[in-house]
Image (cartoon, rainbow, N blue to C red; front, side, top):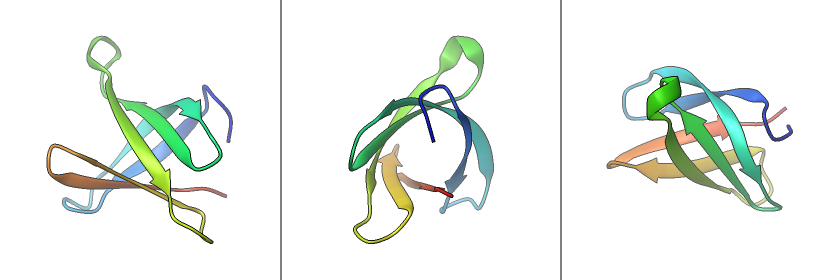
Length: 68
């Protein structure tokens, strides 16, 4: 995964998925931009220890990204 890559962002509350763009990538965090071009929303996600799962919260909902 690199900055600018398109990834699948899952909402665990609604069961829906949407494509997002990797905006920033750190050792234990990930920032993803989702939404239409003019209304991008930033979701900051933290990596779960010993997994390939990133989890973030926004507007009372939980979002996840699983890396390859």
